[in-house]
Image 1 (cartoon, rainbow, N blue to C red):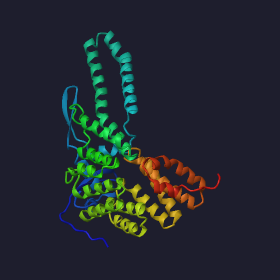
Image 2 (image 1 turned 135 degrees about the horizontal axis):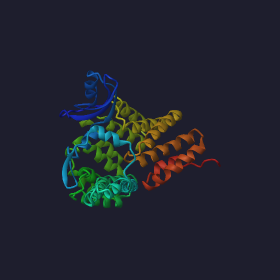
Image 3 (image 1 turned 180 degrees about the vertical axis):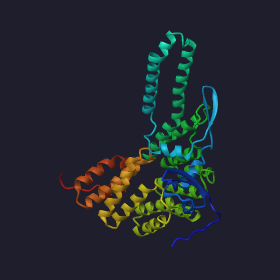
Image 4 (image 1 turned 60 degrees about the vertical axis):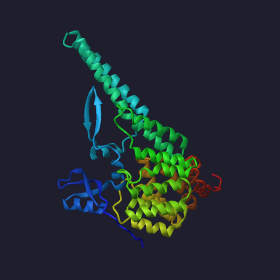
Length: 395
């Protein structure tokens, strides 16, 4: 049985989607000491069809951003507050890339040219629009394009950062961290990547390059920061030990995090470590059972399903394993903005290759292995690669 020690009540803001009494879908933010109490509060107000969209970890991450962001457009300073509704709207949209920004600018430029040809120029010829006004309109258009580029840079480079992290390109990670730190000091870049997030990536890169001590020292400054409470800090430290392949120590830190704040994401992390690095099906099943006592966030569901799939695979229930792993893969494939998406898909496909092999579906096993192999090699997943790389019969 799990023993929990509570030193203090830890409050968090949970974000839910729900239907109100009129059947309208709404977004609700509720601050409570647990996800279950926040859910009960909404149910008491008559909300139904509740879905948890942002849990304790997402709430901690939001603390790294200012409550309001100051932006400057056309020389005027404004304060903007990003709402929960706005965060959820962009979550599953395609990620911001230079190509999308470029084509967005091209579209704006074409629209301006069309405006100038069909509307502005005839008005100018009739004396209804002065040359000065035309210049002003052009300046507004140019300012809009510059504004879009400025707003996009941090998102573009942060996406590059977690992709490099996902693929264990540690030298690239350090370069991108340095660039984003410099970008955060530029006055006209009004969206800043939180300092804690950059330090975590830096620490992982140092550990990945073989300097565990330096990585731990670098990350130590983040402990108990607003966006890195001690329970979450311990969970991140567990991840650093995983990068160093010290999985027993990672398990110790994982359990310390759970003792401070029982939370389903940390239980799922524990289950994943027990399954993947210890092949401890019994321990993982117990951890999953604890995770299931909490309402699962939509973000956590693919990871939860993957854990169930690996557990079924270890228990030789291959049909269940196939079902759960395919569900997990389908959810992640649809979530184009999900951080560490490549790794999640590759690991899931690798286990699907193992399951397909056991079910003697060798064509499917070859397909999944081919899709996963590049990632497994790049991230030194030698044990998993060896497990799913069998001598298949001739096609």
